[in-house]
Image 1 (cartoon, helix red, strand yellow):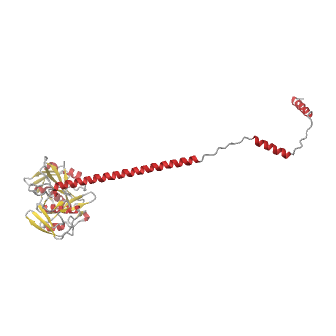
Image 2 (image 1 turned 60 degrees about the horizontal axis):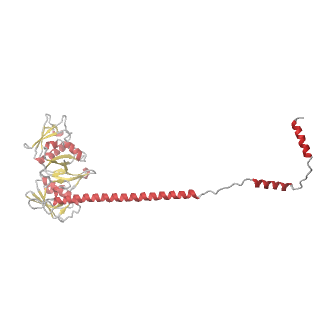
Image 3 (image 1 turned 60 degrees about the vertical axis):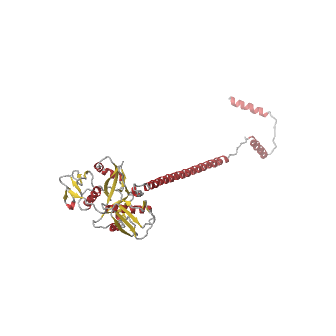
Length: 385
């Protein structure tokens, strides 16, 4: 017999020696009691309530901080903008006041004869010069080659006119925004004022386009540049001369001084007086009437308002212009342009002084018209240093 069987038999015998016992309880009651005991013995789980208010408060706090920072940024930005605007306005006002004071100082400068100096010492488009400076008369044209645009470079004394003229192309490119139609690229100039000549040293293969537009403008620019010095002839210093298109080959060109009306060339970049050549028989009255006509297709506009009627009286070297209908010119810019264009036009007719009568008040734009105005030395002036 194996050992396991032997242990079993011994255990059975021991059990048989216990007294008999009968459990009279109901089986279902016993089962419920066992379940109740088991439930009591189960460990109780402890749940801590979640603090749901913490994320909510954190979100509200972050939002408040962001709103506060945004408010500060917006407020500071507006303050900076206001300060910047006020500063710009103050600077602009100061600059404008300075210009006005400068103009007033020029107008109140006393002349040797006791009269007040005319206010066209420095205008919008014209200028008088002094003994320490000279005028270099340059010229270009509008993009369509219809009008000469004179440009006066105010240069200090000390260099010859030729020195400046031989740098004229550079000056025009640097200072004049208009699309340059300067027709003397590569040309050098030699002035012989004693013989009333200007000699042009022409580069090799220099030519003028065929047709009449460019040759005419070439001649008009030369006349505008040199006739103010009394130059009467342009000489081309080469053996071939210049092929002047339909005019043939020429070796020199007469620069007859012509009468000129002045109108305003104006585009997005430029505001310049332009020359309108007139027939030699044109009267000053006809010239002023021409200045009331614009040619907007070429960006050229009138310089005398069309509603103005006038009469003319010549007193030696002085031109008296009387307005036949009383017109109040309240726009300073319009009045200034009119006076300056009239002064330059009168100068081309040989007048030295212009007196404007029957104006409402004593001023037209920048100008005190209670006294005769002297014609300017320079038109569309640019200072060279």
